[in-house]
Length: 224
Image (cartoon, rainbow, N blue to C red; front, top):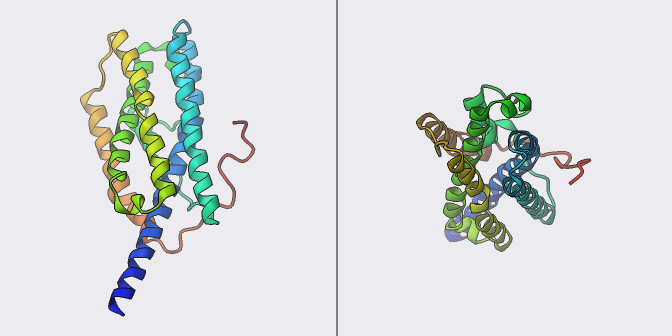
């Protein structure tokens, strides 16, 4: 009887953990590809001659969209909608706020195009975010709860395979233009944001039994 209760509790914990994890990732993947539309605008204005770099950003956007669709499909197969999250759960949201002092939506694309230093900061933010993402996915692929769900494991295997191409082009652009790969304040901001999400946001959502679920998919009405 005790063993059966332990199995039931472990199963409930696993299901809740995956539910929360997938909800947070779904938000971040959606936020990622929609934000990259602004990055593409900035890149086309700041370095229109660099077709290879622009193509890499376009590929990055396509991958983020693909990852979002995979998480959406996971929820569809579960027969439920994701938990409501929002900007408080977005690594890139917090990072842009820390470095540029505004939200992604309020980022002045024209100012970024006009200022090579601002564009370099944007590239560093994206590269650090994606490097953090690779590190996190490597940890998750060793997580027993993730590994126990074949569909979730396959999703993270795809994300892991794609992740290097999401930060290397920005690193290469920075190096080619004599810009530093990362500054100390940016690395500290990245670390603090990661700890905030991992140690505060995720547990709070996990423990919130009354957390609402989305009523519609974030990409409804979008042109992919």
